[in-house]
Amino acid sequence: MIDGPYFVLTVLGVVGTGLAAGVFCAFSTFVMRGLAALPPAQGVAAMKAINVAAVRPPFMLVFVGSAVLCAVIAVVTFVLWPDEGAVELLVGSALYLFGSFALTMVANVPRNDALLRLEAGTAEAAAYWPTYVREWTMWNHVRTVASAGATVAYVLALT
Image (tube, rainbow, N blue to C red):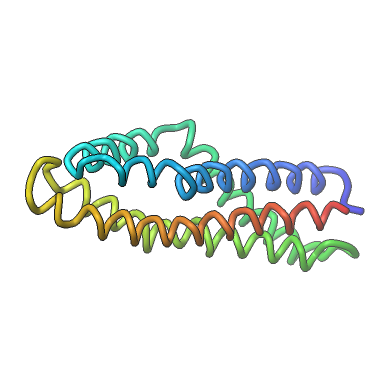
């Protein structure tokens, strides 16, 4: 069984990736549906406000902090290669780093940036809104599954 500081790192990995999975799951299961049900001007305005609020310390600590933690876990695993849990630790790290963090940078952030450049009440924003909701939500589903998978992998490494 994993023990000592390595155990603490892994438990923190469970907590961080689990919190991220929960946030992403909330967006996939009801937040985006609620925003999509609003008139486009209201949905665009609300999502723009959410995107601005998301890049503040509370969420960024969880999101970026978990990525740093996953990278540390992966490096420590490669260096120490524990007798048990190494594969699960590497899988968990890869799922979060690539399926959540990197995917956010290449799929969700560019869509957020495009939405931020639009004025909420314009025809251009109204035309882009359905595409934004569909594509952003699809990639968010992937982030949800990847983050949850990372959490499960880390839990399995502890057992």
